[in-house]
Image 1 (cartoon, rainbow, N blue to C red):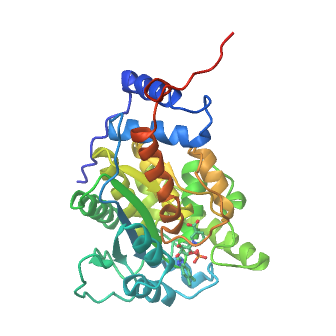
Image 2 (image 1 turned 180 degrees about the vertical axis):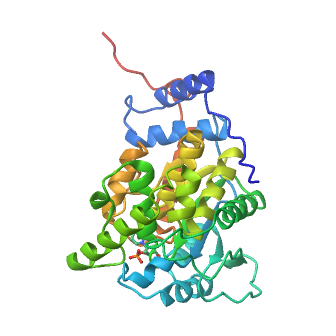
Length: 352
Ligand SMILES: O=C(O)c1ccc[n+]([C@@H]2O[C@H](COP(=O)([O-])O)[C@@H](O)[C@H]2O)c1
Ligand SMILES: Cc1cc2nc[nH]c2cc1C
């Protein structure tokens, strides 16, 4: 039996009021720091502090393969999954560069890559591999469930355990898995109630004919798993090992009052599943960016999320989360260090 962690709602009205007062009395015209002010408020609430500080940020990149990929739903072959995991670990991928630049500890989890990633010793501070393999890729969801309920429960438990073992108070989410935009599309259609056509996009770069084929395959997957409507049933039937592991990670991080920085379409789909299980997780999430992948705008709407940046990224890996990271650092610094009208001796609004 899977025990999901308890997640308390964030409903400290007094702290909300104090934070808003502090923000409104900083030396700036009211509201002039725009959406950074909403970020300041959110981070203060999540961390339960009027002077929040982020420490030991953890970037967790979950990787796995997908039976669906054999149906031609991606522009790239499944081998790219293990090859990119090696690239993450060697320090050459976008997320490796950005994690290094920003001092984010990078953990890459093999949640079920078709070709197992060999264990290795890594130097302190270098990207770290953890093996949390469920199987060598999921089954083909277009003909039946992608995973068993037991496999899904194990992946959720793995995600929870990994976060439990991590230091720090902020978790950034990333993923890698050829075929996983299909998984995210299916979960958005099933759990978000969004028409499939709006959920399906180019992923790694399908052309319009490829997208039409992908849509037809994904419709077969929805039909083959028509009874999987509850969140955990849908996750098992349509999901991937990396998405289920990320879902567990999100639930655990929320229960520990960590800030959760959500990357793009696939990590967002994991948050959707987690939010269907425990809506309070959304109060702990910061949505990093709006992905160029078609379904992401719809997913953000379903989650009522307002992402920080829009650079037309469609890479995944956690790259958008890493790029948005400095904004979180700045939001905390401004809340802690910026003077108030009173402390700086600056006149407030003229009034009248
Ligand atoms: O996160 C996103 O918004 C995103 C959008 C498009 C593609 N991706 C990445 O591309 C891979 C999945 O694309 P595909 O076409 O194989 O389904 C996977 O490794 C993701 O990290 C990620
Ligand atoms: C090269 C490549 C890098 C990626 N990183 C995340 N998803 C990816 C998909 C491809 C194809």
